[in-house]
Amino acid sequence: MLESTLISLGVLFLFVIIGGLIASPFRQPAVIGLLLVGALIGPNAANLLHDSEMMALMAELGAILLLFVIGLEFVIPKLIKIGFKAVMLGILKVGIVLFMTFQVCLLLGMDPVTAIIIGIILSLSSTVVIVKILESKNLYRREEMPLLIGILLIEDIFAVIVLTFLAGATQETSILALFDKLVIATTVLTLAYLLLLKYAKHIIAWFLRHAGDDAVPYIALSICALMSALAHFMGLTPSIGAFLAGSVVASLPGAKLFEHALKPFTGMFSSLFFISVGTMVNFGVIKEYIMLIAILVAVIVISRFVAVGMISYLFANFGKEQTIFSSLAMISIGEFSLLIAQAANPLVSGMDLVSLSAAIIFISAIIMSFVITSYLSVSTMLDHNSIRNIFNKPRSLSKYVKVLFDEVDTENSYSVKFKRLSMRVITLLFIIVFAFIGWRRVVLFAQPYSIWYTVAASIVCASVIVLLAVRIYKRATEAKETLVIILANADSNRDLRKSDFILRSLFIAITLFFIALYSPFLIVATGVSAWFNLIPLFLLAVSIIRMRRVFNIVHNFYVQKTGFPQYKRLNLKV
Image (cartoon, rainbow, N blue to C red):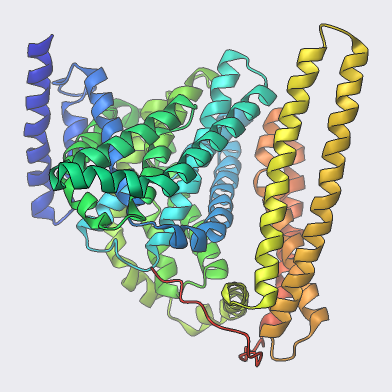
């Protein structure tokens, strides 16, 4: 047993070197060589590796350590600043890719269940692959990356939710029980994160005083392992815990010391991660599904430009080059796609989802590596008057949204009030969620005793939820009115009615857009006829028409600095 494990390790490290040698003459990152080597030595080709459990462990450790190092660059102010944008853009990006893939798969004759699973698989980009390729090409430090990493983390959370529900589908667990599990797990992990933020500084300082700098890598690995283990224990992905652990360490003095101490470990295990992904590639499946793979890869590329390009242009105020770079950077699909394919394989008949996903990961990573440096060329190709004119009105909205975020970041009575009201709304929403979970638990507990206990418990819990919902509505209305005033102050005309109309129109358009994008879940869950697919298309049309009205209103928008003396711009750069 030990002998075979040591031989497997020796073969692995040898082929890590060979992977780098293969990629070097083509001026490509080692990631591409490692994926190719993994495909050649895997069970579907030369079959040189037999210890699959060890490979899986090495791959998991590589992903965990890489997410920990990424977390080291995200201190709390940066996380707070990109948080709302990352959530909104991440949900939009996943929804757009999912919807487009779902429609294409239906046109190819697939059933709705297969179509939505493939849509989910293609909607997730790979944090590990993207980071390593961009680092190797000296593009990781670009200003777009914090937001893109935030979007990737939102995708990881979405993937965890999908995996949880897929596990429930195969084990016949109720949706409400799965929802309870997710909420409780997220809450426990958040509380652990906040406690570490408060006390880790003193504990680590004590260790460093008594053990010296030699203890740095062990302290970092301990925090990473504990948070990853907690996340895994609560049913979440260990990578999320590793990222939060990195964020905790980033808030400490001398965070760079921890990053340098872990660099050798990260490089070693992440290399093994890419080889392990490569071992899942089956060239026979690529040959069998060559047309389907070609169509799906085309969908990935097109959907990335539609999704990442559009949302970053409209809502992140990215320029043309930044938009194209972001679209190309997110092409590669990744590790969570494989996990979802493995979990969903029993639900799909007549198709090997795991081999199909591994092939697409392999191909999309190669495409991303080759095209990422051509973003300037693509930008020049699109620099034509007719194309530029198409984007004039959307650019006006992008500037308008940027002004809105800038004004919210400004320190004044209105922005402080808006942030306070928003936090109250979020807090009340969490309380409602826990009240709902408590209601369900109380009802389940009371059922064996008497129907009257069940009715009484339901009335009490329902009353609490209704009261909380009323408070949320009042606070949300107050927050919206405050936001209208903030936006009107940024407008040269200071027109409250115009600002109110723009916000309402944006809210309605985005809400309809969200409903349409995520309608495939409703179609699959209800098993309705394919004709119901026309409803989301209608909602998309209404959303686009509503958005065009907003474009026309803000096209001539002009921003002038407000004259209020209490305004003070905050420098939130970290």
